Structures are given as structure tokens and as C-alpha cells.
Amino acid sequence: MDYMIRFMQIHESFRQPETEALATLAGIPLEWVFYSHDSPFAIVRFPSTTDPATAARTLITRSILASAIYELWGTGLDYPSLHQDVRQRSAPYWPLHSQHSFRFEIDSFQGSHTSSQHTAIIESFAYMAFSGPIRMKNPSAQFVVFEDFLLDAPLPHQLHLGRLVASGNRKATLNKYTLKKRRYIATTSMDSELALVTANLALAAPGKLAYDPFMGTGSFPLACAHFGAGVFGSDLDGRSVRGKGGRDVRSNFTQYATSPLYLGGFVADLTNTPLRSSRCLDAIVCDPPYGVREGLKVLGSHKPELQAEVFLEDGRLAHLAETYLPPKKAYSFLRMLGDVLEFGTGALVEGGRLCMWMPVAGATAEEEPKGVGGKERRGGGGEGGQEGGAGKEEEYAIPHHPALELVSECTQHFNKWSRRLLTYRRLANSCIDENEMLAYQAARLILQGENGVGTADDLNSFRRKYFRGFLDPSMPRQHEKLPHTY
Amino acid sequence: MKLLTLNFLTCARKTCKSTAAAFPLHPKDAELEQIEIDMNPLFVKNMLPRLEWEAMKTLTQELGLPALPAETPAPEELTTEDGEASQVLKDLHVLLMETSVASGKLVCGNCGHEYAVKEGIANFLLPSHMV
Ligand SMILES: [Zn+2]
Picture 1 (cartoon, rainbow over the protein chains, first blue to last red):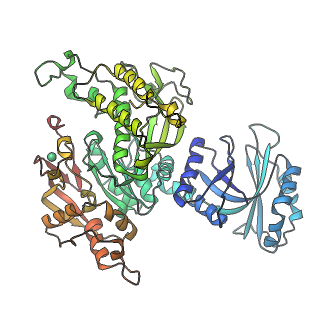
Picture 2: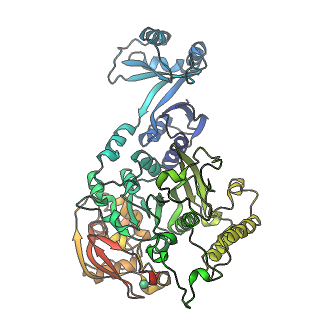
Picture 3: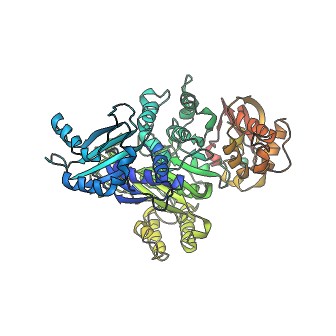
């Protein structure tokens, strides 16, 4: 039997990755029969599963972007073809439900009916001959006719009939975690819905350990702890960890009754992390600070001491030295993302996941647009393409690391900008391309070298050439993305 | 910060990280706090192989806590024959999950730098000349 997932028609590019992550977590083989970003109805199959109903139930329990899962009793382009398919697919199951209480409803996406049309549609299924009582509350079988309309279309272009297997906990979970009711938040707190989706993509679960190196008010650790993972976090800004007047990260865990899972927070900089070099994390979840919003204190141009002239150890002015790299915020931001990937490689267990948010586009030229703050300067939004847009923004390449496989790439759109959630999986050491790893490390060393060579642009072009020589043609996915860590 | 977390932390200085003397950090004037919480056997079981046991032993010794077994307990030592939580698990739970450093300092055995802990939050930021 096939199953139908009822998705929410939001955050479309996150929906399949979330469902796939939940399938991976539960060890459920999952096959997509139909999926479209334009529809809230997707059809899946659980091949070689002895108990697909349990698989379906498991899959939906934790889902944030899907509300329920149904047995697919029929599908068609119009009502005659739907009825024909229902007879073909589900006739053997009718007797199982013929004596039980039941209920029929219609779920129309971008469409509606008068109540007489509604009744007529439901009565058109009378041939299934259910003689049990109709019960609106908690019937033993719930049937839903799904209608998929294109916007403003007079008739649906796709119809399904489903029998409810299980509903998820989306509503209750979002209601519990909404920022409106959270004790301690900041302007940078990740909205709870996407924080929970991120925790699903990170495979957060009981018995696992997750870490957020840019914890802020704790949005991601809270979401991971909701799914049972042990969590800890750190932030460069001590004030955000400590909070004020009893409102702090800890108080958020207390609010959600997950404080036993909170292992603690500390103040630290990822580039000088106090975590010992050991592969002890199951997940890293983070939204590295970007732009004016948080102030990139980790980076040169924002350090007050660098506002003044900087002297090298031998007494020369730093910016007069041949090797001087002017502080560049965007450049540094991408370098920080590279640091996150490198950190993840060293800290994640095999199969462990790194979930990292980043803006789709940003300033990459030397000069930052001046006098514009916050989100405005991220202009030039829109999917993928980023056709120039405002100022000198351009689309960032997706960071890559030879030890990390990109599992999914999801995009959230705002009016004037977009951001991505990238999910990586730590490969087994035996699966890492050795040459690629050597090249990567060499490039990093050069970039980090205390007597750095040339300008950032020189380094970038060096890397481009260097990496191209090591490309493995059997890895087209990575081929497309290289080179682009910094 | 729970004692479990401490086992994952060392000196933040790059020059110290690779040295054996920098780990574990040594508590100084540490004020401990114990908060009773429900047992999480699966989590403790999963964390055990990730712990540096020698460092755990050093820490408990320096804090004047009851001595730990010589070796990392094996997973089967965590439950009794009838599937209940063993004394080993109960002790580990108290030590790793219920006990935390509320305040004091964490000292690097290599460079001597002291990281302050206040209200359970350790500060690992380095002064710029040490970065
Ligand atoms: Zn040190």
C-alpha cells in the first residue's frame, strides 16, 4: 500500500529533507512516489517493510512540516478516475471497516465547495458500503478526500482518497515552543518552527549529544532537547548565555522541562574552541552570526583594537606589511563557515550531522556597503539565482569539506533576502577521498599561515586551480560546488 | 556546567590543545552544586566510551569526590541482572549528570591560565595576546 503525507504548504524545500531525516533516524526505507513543492500532498512507499503502518506512524510523530499520514485508497485526475482507482486499490479493505464508526471529510488545497457540493462528493463514495455509525469525534476510521487546485482554477487537477493512519504533533509542539511564550529570547532567536525542523535534520534523539557553538538564547539546543538529545552550547557573547534577571538559557530549559538534558553553556570563540579534539558529538546545530545584526566580533574589522593601527611583532605597522590582508567581513564570514566545517569534521562521530544556516547571498567585494544596517543590506533576494541585486552582493557558494557529505540544502525566503539550511553527514574515514582531503588541508594551512601569501583573491584563485586538479569525476555533486569554502 | 561537560573541555589556547598537560583542566576554589534529576541510562551508556576516563578520575580526585573504578565501566555493568539500574549507573548518574561546577576557576596544567566559572558558566575567551 502507498501512503499519503499531508504537508503544510510552507518551507517547501525543507519538507522532503525533514521526512527523509526522520526515516533515516528510524531506519525506515522510504521511496517517494510523488512529490511537488507546489502541492501539500505527497505519496510515499515503504519498500521491504513488514509493518508499513507502524513505519508511517513513526515517520509522522516527530514531523514539524507534515501534519498527518494516510493510507492511499485511490488517486485520480478527476472524480470518475478517482472512483475507478479507489475500487481497484482499496476494495479488499472495505469489509474491514464496514461495521465501524467512520467519518468523511474533504481537504481542498486552494479550492472550496458549497455545502451541497460537499455532501454530493461524500455521497459519491457510497459504493464502499460502510454501514457503521457516522461519528465526527474519534471515529475508528477517518477518510479524507484530498483536492489539489491550481491557484484560481475552477476544478481540482489532482484528487486522492486517504484513510488516516496517524496525525503528528506539529500543532502542540509549535504552540509549546512559540517565541511568544518563551521566557528568554533575543532578536536573533531562530523561529521555533525552523529550529525544530533543524533538530529533526540533525537527527536529535534520546541518547545523543548535540552542540551549538553559536548558541545565543539557545533556540537549537532547546529544539534538540525537545527530541530527547543531551545538549550543550557556547557563545562568543557571554551576555547571551548568562542572560539577566533569571531570564537566561537555563531558564528556557526549565520552562520546557528539559533541563536534565542541558549539560551547560559556556563562553567561547569557535576559532579558539576549548572542546578537546575528540569525535564525541552526534550533532552540531548552528546559525553562525552574519552581518550587522549580531556584530561579527570574532572578525577583524569589528574589533575596537583594530580600529586603531595595528603593529606587527617587529614593530612595523601591520597594514604596511606586504602580506597584510585587510579585514573583510564577508570574506571572514565565509572563512568562519569553513572553520565550522573543519570543527565538525574533528568533532562529529561517523554519521553525525552538522546543520548550519547561512545567508544565500552577501557582500563578497572588498568594501562593505556603507551606512546600511541589518537586513536591508542583504538585498538582492530571490531563489538561487541572485541576479546581482543590490550593491555588491552575490550568491555564496555552498561550503564543502571532503569529510562531510552534503545531505540536504533547504532555502527560506524573506522579502529581501534568503537563507539556507545546510545539512552535512560526517563520512567514515574510509570513505573520504584522500587526495581531496590533502588538497583541502593544504589550502587551509596556506590560508591560515601566519605569513599568509598574497591577497584573498590570490588565494581563492590558487584554491580554484588546486582543487580542480583533485576532482573526482565520480562525485559530480561535489564537483558542482567546488571550490568555495572561503 | 555538569562534570560530564568538563570532560570535553581543555585549554582554549592553540598551543596548549595538543599537550597532555592541558587536559583535564584543574578545578580551583570550585563550588559544586548537585541537582537531582531523573536518570537517563541510554545517554550515560552512550557517553561512557566518549569520556577520557583518566581525566574523569583526576577530576573526581581533585574535587574530593568518591573514587571511580579503575577502568571505564562496561555497558553491561550499568544494569543489574533483572534489568534495573545498577549501583555503578546510579553513581555515574550522580557524578556526571547531577553534579556541576557552580563557580570557581578551571586551570590549564600547561600554561597556567585560569578560566573563571560564574553561575555555572565558564568563560573561555582568551585575552588578545594569548590568541
Ligand atoms: Zn593552556
